[in-house]
Image (cartoon, rainbow, N blue to C red):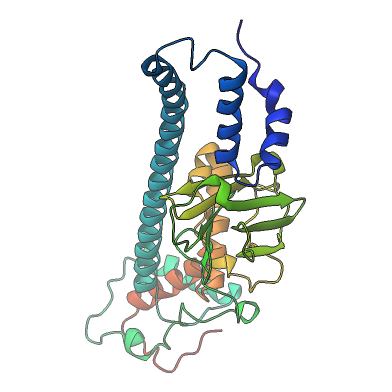
Length: 329
């Protein structure tokens, strides 16, 4: 009959909570009990009893190592995707910036008038004269700097590659659904679970070494799913905490309420989510995301770019006209 392990969680947690030495004291208590109240040590050869003990240990150690390796693989895969997305996005933005005409936006009425003139010119099959080159590229005002900071974003922090921030005492990253916090403990000894305090009560989060002032102690800026809160020790020196967001469609701008926020306009969206959409819906969402990025960088939206393309084509069809003194609003 299989053992209902969770049935005994309450008893064991109560025992562990009363042990000043943590897990080491709990082990000592269990083996003391086996020595006094069972034939574990006297009923078999010590080699056999030791082997049985190690078999149980290896059973769970393998599960932990397997889970740890899978989590590390997922993290490396996520970091690789983030790096590829950033590189692709940067290349796309640079290409768009280089290709756009360096002129000011024109009105809808002017765009419509230019379209009519261009259509009329094409119907007449009139070949443009090459006697005078267009001065547009030399005289048009430069495009706005794509690094110009939005007024609302002044004072905000630039996110790291994981869409979080590298603080002095900890680092955090995020996806739309999950947050990861990494806390280097700077201990002079290899860390064990009994050395660490890592708890969350509603939205109050505490992490540090037992018997020392906490490294992190504050109110979370957003709600989380408490049941998803987990932590592990990595390389015996860093505590890695993960939990799921309550609102999985929102980027966090900070972990704690009293911290300086990051600029969420500069996070890398999870473009893979678009694969769930189809047809016109996906095209509309992609257009909205593109226009939003363009506005944030002070660059023309897709509609504004169409107007500029119309003007550029008209100027190319009429090289005999001097646009050097023209102003477009």
